[in-house]
Amino acid sequence: HWAFQPVQRPEIPQVKSSKPIRTAVDAFLARAWNKAGITPVPEADRGTLIRRLYLDLTGLPPSAEEIEAFEVNTDPRAYEKLVERLLASPHYGERWARYWLDLTRWAESHGYQHDLPRPYAWRYRDYVIESFNADKPYDVFLKEQLAGDELTPYADENVIATGFLASARISGNNMDKAAQRNDVLVDIVNVTSSALLGLTLECAQCHNHKFDPLTQRDYYRLQGFFVNGQLGNLSLKGDGLP
Image (cartoon, rainbow, N blue to C red):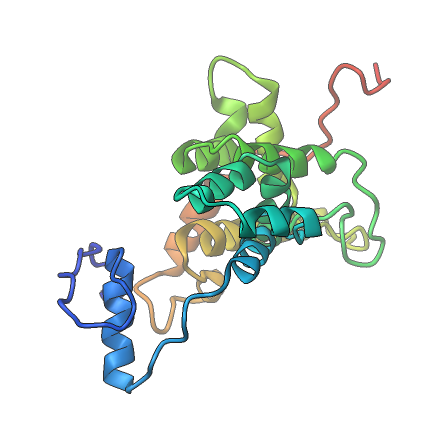
């Protein structure tokens, strides 16, 4: 199947460009520009550059003083140093964690009719922010969220990471508890597949997928991985709880 072929590293094109070819990405962009007959815009001035960098990495604009200091900075590595400083800012994790939290449907309430609050949902939010700021390896980041309660040695952080699974929506208006439980598992499987695998498995919940080589059996085999888990609040020392 085309979607499951190994990623191949393409050959870097040899092109001519009015802009410097500093990286392999520049070469591919230049080839596309040439093919489309597009002339790239001139390089941004330093005031525009610092504003773009701040908004991209922290979501916050630079101060007037920061813009002025960057414009007169003659250090040839001024841009690289600014990038490193912004990546080290706590605001970097706060901005970029939002994208992951959107993918994983994080919320501070259950959703549906009753929409009951989740008083400790902030723990998972902070875990994601801190993981981004610590530049945590992606494989470790995923492993902690999928199976943090199974990792040894025990660590509060690993258990908090499973808030990825506990973010499932819960309908408090369903009298059929088996159906309510299944709805939670369906939510977990669908988000795990879309956020981590880049696949939409919803179709296979009810029938074999029409376009992808995924069967209903595949769906429920994946769901079986999560069946033994149970949603709940995590209480730690300092919460004022027994």
